[in-house]
Length: 162
Image (cartoon, rainbow, N blue to C red):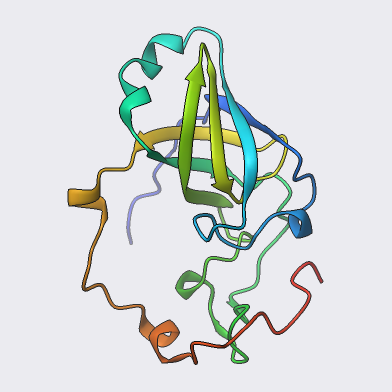
């Protein structure tokens, strides 16, 4: 039996401010050209961490899905009709509701990152920010499992906030 690991408490580095207040206000995924504009307000005292970030067009945002409640081990993804294992999906309701999105970095003003094309909600706690670096973050020949077998025109089959 593996030893039980104790995690240190997480402290958000900032918070998202945007017009998307409820999950049906936001797109299902970031980076699909459907997300709105927003801001990440970085916590006081961390402003020096933003040095040199302004030259990047995109950043990874690691966040806490603060409105997610509970989870199911199998879910039906939006473009599919079959139940899939939770870890083969991007559903926000997870054992640890951690989200990861690659968002456009529009500009930085002091401790505020202006972002676009995101899928986060107003009040979302931000856990970390990392630059998107194409040579190591892009995997041109990556496979997407069952998603590769879905029809290209497989649209969202249900109102996803239900």
